[in-house]
Amino acid sequence: MAKVHEITVWARGVIMDKEGRDVINIFAKAAQMDGKHAQAFDNYEDLPDRVLVTVRKYVRLSDEEIEHKYVYTNDQPEVVVIAEATIVKGIDVLLGMKKGGTLIINTNRSIDSMLKFIPNADLLSTIATVDADGITGVRTVDFSGSEGGVDESGIGKGIAAPIVGAIAKVTGMIKKEHLAKIVSDVSGMERGYKEVKIKKLG
Amino acid sequence: MAKEQMMTGCRAAAEGAKAAEVEVICSYPIRPYTAIMMELAKMVANGELNAEFVHGEGEHAQVSVVLGASASGARAFTGSSGVGVTYAMEVYSPMAGGRYPAQMSIADRTLDPPGDFGSEHTDAMSTRDQGWLLGWACSPQEVYDNTLINYRVGEDHRVMLPQMVCQDGYFISHIPDKVTLGDKSQVKEFLPPYRPIGPLSLTHPVSHGPQIRPDQGAPMDAARAKTFLAVPKVIEEATADFNRIFGRKYDPFVEQYKLADADIAFFIQGAHSNTCRTAVDSLRKKGVKAGMARLRWVRPWPTHQLANALGHVKAVGVVETSTSYGGAMRGGNLIHELRASLYDLDQRPLVTSFMAGLGGETIWPADFDHMAKVLTQAVQEKKVRNYVQWTGM
Image (cartoon, rainbow over all chains, first blue to last red; front, side, top):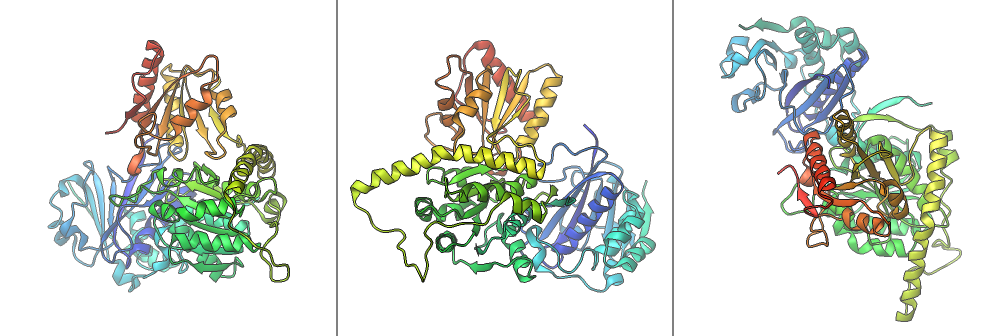
């Protein structure tokens, strides 16, 4: 069985539900454009219809067909993306990660100040921050997209654009030129790619 | 040819309803099927689908509304999940007895208590004796396909019955998978317009659903039972046409996977058959002659097709994803009917069952390996130790 790479995105219910889902859908689509096999789905148990609850979104990537589709959670994420920085305060966002993982946070705070909230940062080989809120200015609030519904407002219009740009730069798992064909806000994506701050850890 | 897209089972169901050009839709929200209605509402709002979209005040109302719509000659569509399915129970028999071929799209969900979003087949399985066509898809693609196939079969004048098109909640309803939608000419060739028999009409008044005398009851029940005898042939024709027009390879009733030379077989329906197939492959690599029979229709139950498909196997393990508390085999529902289907064979397989995937739990490849061990042991001992085993606990 081929190796399946797990990427987990944390966001907040309702106000950022679409944004979190945009990140995984864009990620999976970009990977598919590279010939990879990808799955993208919401955590079903996270109650996305409740405002501000933490919601998880997952991507799974593989070079071969993903045989075992029916898993509720990414148990061993290699990359964790935090779409709303305060989530790190109350939750072990790196749970299940093996040593050598990557954490990307949407924040305008410094990497070192964020590290204070990551007690198990020794699992990380890379941490990065991107000020997605600063770049796009708004979060898209779109109720219609919950539960797998179609997104009227376009994919990658809000903070998802700079976040996926940052992911491309930091992980190399997806290509910027593919992202440009998917996201609505191409310049926001480009800025995320360019402005992301990266720190390599021991 | 339309190209392949990634979509959830909910979206696929909505795309199927859109392709079938349904005329009346009645919604009421409950996870996980809700997204079907969200998609359809958007299609109607955007002018992509010309349908009357009615908000029911509950599931009982939903099914009542589509009953009325179907009776007046409209192709009608509704759906539900879990306790929503059971809340509408009263209307199922009138719908089938009145011979209204509306469709209900089910993304299944565990019944309460306590509240659980996870998939389980008990909700729709508990309606199986109400006279509807009933079956589970195992992929978003099959959800789309079954939506069209069910309308075609249900609206056939030899049938005229409502249909429950089921998919596993979350596993199929919420995880996107590859789907190729049909184009308009394919759908048009496959699915003729709905032709109601004696519809409600202002210009030609008729009565539907009158009260009858007790002595009229049994003949009506017999007529309904007899109708079901005619359904398999219609399913075979519709499946053959569908395969030809859309380029698919469905067996009408039972998907047979590596069964021809199998010693042991899993009998299963719905999403977990995908994991089961990979489990069969890995068991074969280890030298275990395993196979899988996947049920596509619970109603009508394919008695003879199952006897043909599984009669030669030494032991069958029924993977149950529904409960039948206090039932003959102490576990789920499918084993009762499978054992009955095999009973008349001179040499019949040993049959046991495994309770798995309840409450929305994933059935893991290791669970199938365990089931295979139990089945192999039964073959060696020439008997099953138990009618039922609970796996994954």
